[in-house]
Length: 515
Figure (cartoon, rainbow, N blue to C red):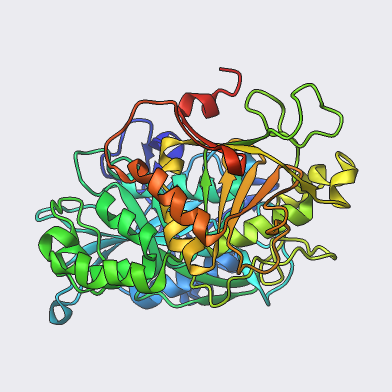
């Protein structure tokens, strides 16, 4: 991810591949057909004095108007913020979904021990225009577009006169993930990034998401927009969030000023984790929380696959095998809706161990409380016209082979200990195909895997029901997956009497299925 498709609207030096220009007093888009350009408003005169008194030009898109209004409430003294904007807008075929990222200077709050920092706000995950160019408009009652925009607070370094632009590039990367996967973010979610967020040598290599502490939800003519703040964290803090829950780790970060403080400001120069700063936090808060609460991580997008070993490979007529190196079968729209709802819930607290129901009358979108998405037309390709018999029956399997890359495999103990032993479920959704694997315990309602038939599939969606006794045994056998050290791949685990095999494979197998 680079700044090749961005314009920094200022007169400051910008990264390679980024052009610079002077921003007008407020971006005032003018429309000509499907193109958009920016222009500074004309100087106030007899004919324009009334318009100049208005906060925004008459043609200002209402979605932009709502977000800018909230920004102006926070920063009335900064009506002309620096912006990064896509050279070619997403709705004109450009690669970056965010039309703009505004950058403000926040003085912090000395009384609350909040340092001065740069505050970044995205524009584009919500519906800015209301004319279906990016998001389908369905009214003002539900969420606008995906229902949120991203923000980020970066500690200002001494002597720094302008905000760095790399957070805008980071936000574009997250936005691309949302647009491509249709998996929205929720407060408490985590993002495994595996690289310093600013491409430096920093230990801040992953992200948690939470509500922005200052920005309030905005009602626009196209729906409600909330603001989710990106919080940079170390690997150890990410693992703690996965094993326990994101909200718990965010609360701990708020109590440690140098690790975020009350406004959760990211300091890329932070060299210690919260557990190194205060060793008691791990044992007194995190370990006890895991033991008491389990994990609230209900699913992840992952590199995974599964094989049906119940039938010989040559039996293709009615096989549900999801084999690496073969064209993956499609999920039905109803199955896709249920899996996405599971992933959408992310780290939300599950009060009941129930899988989201498969609705018989499918709504246009993921669920009843979110607007339809552009992917609905693609989902129609996953309908009964491709594999009609899969919508009317569930296939019970005798033997299955699960395949994960090392990162996904490392989450299996979390799935077993933090989820299934607490009567919950855990879903792996493939990022390279339409495959999904859901582990369920005997206490989960709504599952199509049963104790009598613990392996069951709807097309490429496999469910595996594991008893508590078997989970305990698997945890013992998979103990080496908890090691932070990389081991030699491929690695295989097998339980012949259960007719279950798990393989941990190199990333290349999933990145190149024909490898």
